Image (cartoon, rainbow, N blue to C red; front, side, top):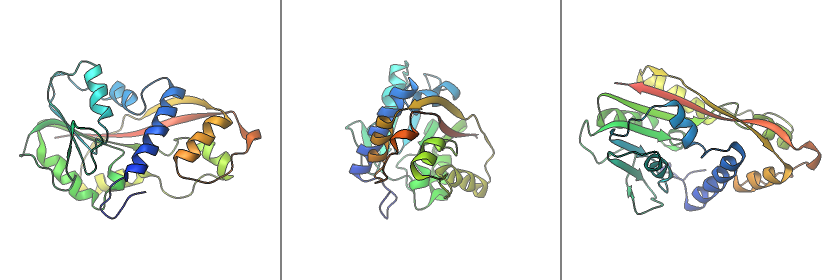
Amino acid sequence: MTNMEGRYSLGEKVSLAARDALLSRLGGEEWPFDPLLDLVEVPPTADLLDVGAGDGRFLQTLRTRGHVARLVGLDPLPGSPEVARGEASDLPFADGSFDLVTLVRVLGHLPDPLTALAEARRVVRLGGRVVLAAHGGDHLRETWRRVLGRTPGVPGPEAVLREAITQAGWVASRPDARLPVTLTAGDVEVLVTASGAHDDVPQTAFPVRDTLHLALYVARF
């Protein structure tokens, strides 16, 4: 999904936004940001850095919720003027610049996750937190089983988070987010197309009741 620098291409970001729009409609919440913020308390006075901010939707969600402190977005391919250009492996900030650093669906797309974690740790203040998120193993599991005829066998993006956290020696809490959804065949066709797949959607296999699953890891320092 990414090039050699571990970045999303512009086309991939558009596809991700299309998938999020569909899942937000089905789940009744802004996916994945509202479920994340429902579980991870972010004080409105906390200075926050969002690494891999893309088009800045997470920052916009925070402002909508009344955030008043500094919000900074960083991405190799910024999708909005409020997001600065930069790499997770070389954050252009002084030590201890933020109360909270977030990497939402980012770590699995980086060539060096451990360096990204070290950089996030460097710029977070004493008593601050680093929040990592990725789609968990239950995310749309039944939908993809019906499309593919089997459960996808490759490790999901959550596995990268677990391995990197273990190798870094971090201790993290795990407040997962799950939302029930029902997908029609039309919904699944949109999802398959936005995912860049070319599988035929078996019309008789849907609608299906499924789950949106966001795996969260919260490390405090």
